[in-house]
Image 1 (spheres, helix red, strand yellow):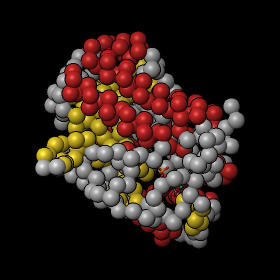
Image 2 (cartoon, protein in one colour):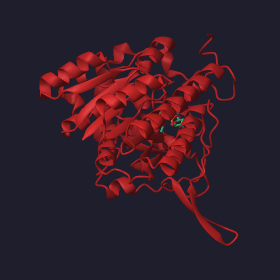
Image 3 (cartoon, rainbow, N blue to C red):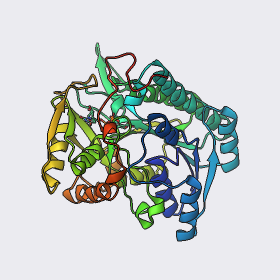
Length: 388
Ligand code: UPG
């Protein structure tokens, strides 16, 4: 298949592009390098050094003989988006090209507005481009489990059968997200569902859990193929942060009681899920939702797992929660559709965590310890992290 990976220079977009290429697909990536720019803005860097996109692609070509095409541009530029689709003529578009950190979106008004404009307008331009260039293109969109929040009922895969006053209907599952970032993905989901219903587009919304890990079968082939490993309090995801904190002898920063439960997924399963979604497209007019997570754990359980696996002393610190979120709640998620398509999950294992310790130890001297402490507070309108 011809597959275009938007956001193909990022934490997950890059390993996904490699995996799809390895599977024999013709792949091109698009990126505006916004993720590298956030590093400059926040004064932090990926723990693992990453090469330029051009070098990564050249190394992949040397190792495998496979070419990956490149489009440099921004989805909020509609002309760029249309021209890219006309030029590459993809059968599937995988869309990672969004600002993806909840704390970044909660820094202040400017960052909240940027996040929503970037994400919602970029996706709108993409929908229009698909609508005009080729309505058969299958959109595989990265959503988030954070769209649902933590409702008192089981979380279904995107849709809910309801009975109301004796009548029944099938509606989009009610959303109650916890940040302006997560909200941006709710808005995207509505816009995408609308275009499936009105124009007959085909789309899969992958509501992904919190990703952990840094290596895939393809990225380990050469150091220069590595993907980023974020540990800072803005972009680092929780388990990856706990691993680095353990290695540095820094306390694991559990927010609040740690009773909050989240869906989680290994990076190796992320790339496989996207492959499965592309190879098994949604029907024309179908808005399909998969809950892309393999298990649910509380934050305290994640911290306890890291503590148990680490060969040394680990302290767990309960910070006042900088976010506004329930810390004790019901959480039961249906996530069977990717398993039905053939996913064999890598559940969180001691082996995986031990291998992450090795990555963290190798690059520990690159860590800026002050970047580990959370500075963005959900209750403030303007957090002290940014004065611009
Ligand atoms: N948390 C802590 N301590 C930390 C960091 C986080 O307790 O040091 C908690 C946090 O309060 C939250 C949970 O861990 O309850 C998850 O936080 P995090 O790992 O930052 O994930 P999200 O903010 O949910 O965002 C990540 C990705 C996002 C994706 C989402 C999927 O950044 O792009 O949509 O996971 O759920």
